Image 1 (cartoon, helix red, strand yellow):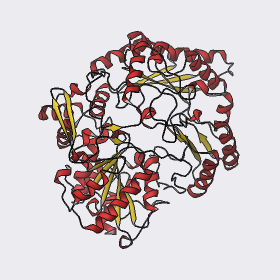
Image 2: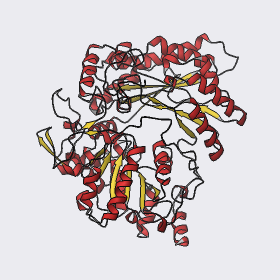
Image 3: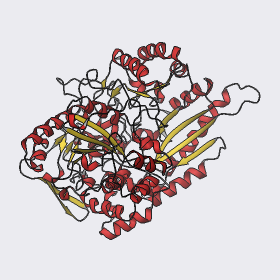
Image 4: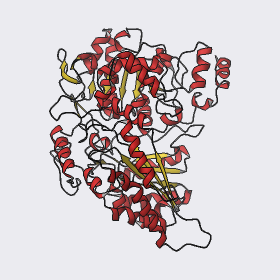
Length: 609
């Protein structure tokens, strides 16, 4: 077996993606465990190994003496070809056993355009794609992640979905599996049991009905729950967080220690799904974070720590914590990155702390080019905030900053689109006020513009999405309005964004399209070198499905495919925020005034914002 694997790895460009054995990887004896779980990430190793949620759950599951959790990633083209030549099924990194040897496979759904990779991984593993075709000989297939908040486009392929945060519910599922395995009962009995665990959705226990372009009914079968309530972890200090992490042999996308400061967001941006589904805010204490940092530095040898949250500068103990963290890291030459800073509370003092050891990149997200549009999306910042932050950055030594915007937002005008490069130009002009040394290069701005995709469980979930033609017209407006050589303009493929929108708000009618798409060669759809709009249109045509019905405007009273998922934020609140967006009215953030979203209240009505 060893020489066979060596021959396989020598046939691919990056064998480090497949060999396993990294520092921190966990190995157990098969005969000592009762449950074998394969954690599957439908993208390359270097992407999946950068995902904090996967790292947390890997170590959490392996903390159980009865469970061995291994990893599997989507192989690149050269590996797929090498495996096919050797008639070899997809395998897990640790044991190198085929996925059919496992009790359960768990897929992380972070991006809609990775759905074809999920099916391709099942195909490579020689496991039937549809759950109805997987009898007793095959593992259970589950999935979680942000995309699981609308599970319907994947409903025919997944035995059960985990909705919400996974630390506690995964342990309950493994306990249920252990008891079921002892019982000798049929597979349906296990699914019946887990369907009553809070946060678990079993799609085969529900029937959906459609008429024209709408879903008109969604009916539980038997005693399946009518609503699936998301799971949250209430106490972040006592929540599991690994003190060891796998250190890859090769470079990954985020090659550093990741410390999660808090979950949730106080801000209420109307376009942001994460800001809604991860409510309410729950923080880790500075003491707990410092303890984790100390152990992770010792156990991994990384030279950078990234502080993660949806809005890092909203962490209430940030000043105290960063001062103490720098005292720990500066003497060891370990740098600190804060990737999610708010423009309106960025300061010179904070910037100087970030640069203490090593200067990292700086990105701000105004999201929209005009104040009217920023009010529509409830961004809560002004042009003055943007320019002041840019001035601080340039005066503090940064020669380049990045700005992030969106086009295709609801209620957007051509003037709003043109305002994006115009604001970038104003940012450049702030650098003119800063004295420069002779021969010093001028400051520059990189402007990245993505195409907005309406997401479930947001105030914009009812909104029509721009077509690819509309987005291309707006991209032309951007190009025409961008006149400065010191502003670099980047934007995304509009057709890909539209397809993302189709699957973001789609329903079960898309399952057959996904299956057909894989048959005609769709995979790695988020990678430009692989994405083929023509293949996708073939799949839709072959299945007789019109993709435009999923990006249309939704009526405020119609049944939405994801309405059975209770994300904590009420539908009435989302509708109220949508109506405020139409009027350009803002909603103060949670620490100014509670907006009654419904997410607060798991402890005597107290919001932890």
